[in-house]
Image 1 (cartoon, rainbow, N blue to C red):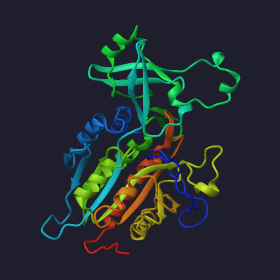
Image 2 (tube, rainbow, N blue to C red):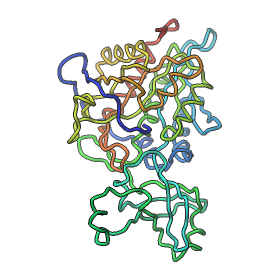
Image 3 (cartoon, rainbow, N blue to C red):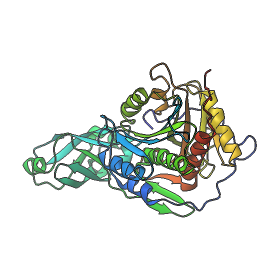
Length: 381
């Protein structure tokens, strides 16, 4: 999800009253999901996770990649193409937030800007991996030690301009041999499996969404196809420009779309459910309703969840959602668009945390919704 990082406020609902049902548990991280999370790919530099996504999609779909780098997996309709084609776009974004090198000084320190939105205090003391033409280079994020700060400086939050990257170079000449301006970095953090089917990792926002798009398409393919063609994409550049979602929605001309992203799990300390809604880990996918979203697509997802007994909650949006749905729904003459989110804790940090049952339930929900589509289904307002 791109900045700003506040998800729309609103009242959460379960199906349809009472405490939300909880996912039963037992579904873990698949090898494909772990590969996607381990691959490094800030906005505009998504080639590594895209390669993982494409390889997995090639087992069941027709696969291609467009000029901005977004991969596409097509699932033919069950009846073939002998009649008019209806197309459902299923989209999660595959990029992550990162850092980009802007200057290398004569002492060998690297200076940088953020790629996507960072809470600067999270970066203090982190280890990094910088992807360069010569391969990965590791370093650390440094700033002036607290012992050397003036009293008034200690009261302020750190800013990116006060930090630098140290790769252990002797001087600027050696540093420039190792790294070039424009090289990008991510936090050096591998996925960590935790008890109760939970997983912590950088890049859950939004490798999870790209994985769900892939998995939903696979489930539809296993079912023999839907009445509509399914176009699953892992959009690039969401954290910076919505570039992949803009170009994919324009090029593919879908008749409807379901966008997948993450939202804030509200069972972590300090979160007000009256503002954010109630979306606990284990309560399943979060279906959004609101101003820019199509109510017919919402009702399709809601009905699919109830029919398949998939736990879910509902989130209300009074304006822009901060997701690719904001770009997709206004493409060309407009695309009826729904939004399904996965609740996670600690968004835009190297320890984003999810319950894996929610991820798999999200894929099942979207596949079930796709399989309910009829050739004559209309989402006209």
